[in-house]
Image (tube, rainbow, N blue to C red):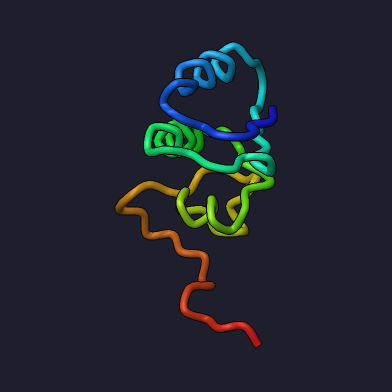
Amino acid sequence: MTVDGRLGADVVAELERVVAELSGPVCLDLAGLRSADEAGLGVLRALRAHGVAVIGASPYFRLLLGLEEADIGREPPLGPGSSKRNGKRGQGRT
């Protein structure tokens, strides 16, 4: 499913409704997303927490959503208090 343009409070309920009506794994393509207010970011975070995959997010939206490149299109990150780590933090690129 593609999310384009602006994701604001005025369309959050519609996005939630459409996603809820879909069956099977859901993947949101954010390549066309240009802006999102706090309500829009909140619904994207909530959908991610409920297993919705995200692809095509710009580096800016990955930062705002707390996604690492490895998280895109995969299972949601582990919740607070988890001891599992990916072992990549703090390692610079060469």
